Amino acid sequence: MSASSASPVGRIGRVARHGAIRPGRLGEVLIEIRGGIEAFLAEDVDGGAIGEDEEIVVVEQTAPRTVLVARLYDRPDAVTEETP
Image 1: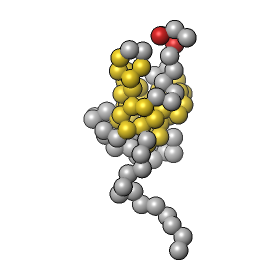
Image 2: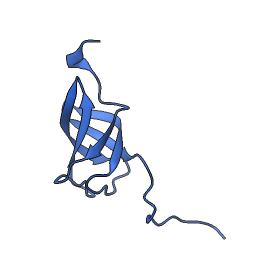
Image 3: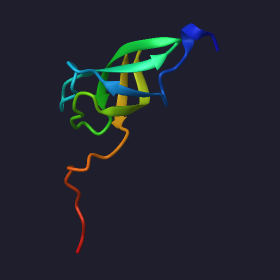
Image 4: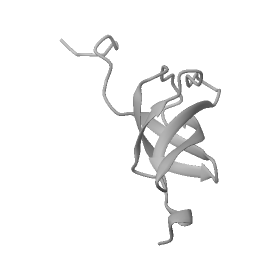
């Protein structure tokens, strides 16, 4: 695989400070790839929100500069449903 064809899928990155991901809107993530850090447009794989500076993992590439991402770690303040 040449350096120019490296896939972002499976790589860990971070949501850009000015690029928070919101439901129905693309955000921006920074991913270390091809010997540098590159910016990609991103959407949450679950359709939710991911805030700025949160760590993400790329799960799918949907276009040359657009990816689907998931939050790498659950937020401690996230609401979870539990059955009694």
